[in-house]
Length: 151
Image 1 (cartoon, one colour):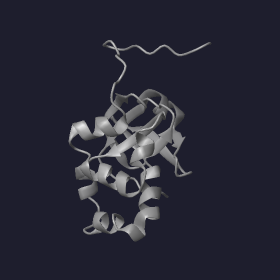
Image 2: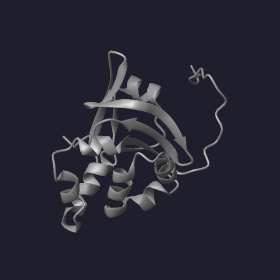
Image 3: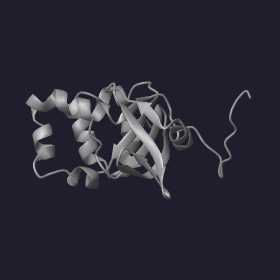
């Protein structure tokens, strides 16, 4: 009644890299990192946090209609791009088991994402979580296969 015990299968060491550095070293988030820089959010994601990021891969961005990414990266689309990216970020460290049991989480954009089990998969709105609980010094990353758009 005074806490939750999580059973783990390995020793958890403190992460040394922040969210941006972890994403950069993975090599599959180039579009996300470029977008975060263009929207002026990369600095915040390197800050203290903590943050939880639902990180779409380069392949997820490639699934958007042709020209969408290029259009969003234009200076006149900065606010729209920032809103989309903030919809992928939740304040605090939210691990997958906590997220699923909560069912939703309020994003930095001000709207909530819905988190649920669907068969063997965990979904954030309609995006499938392909890798969960990647630790960073200032938060946690969950890799998703689709860019989620504010509803």
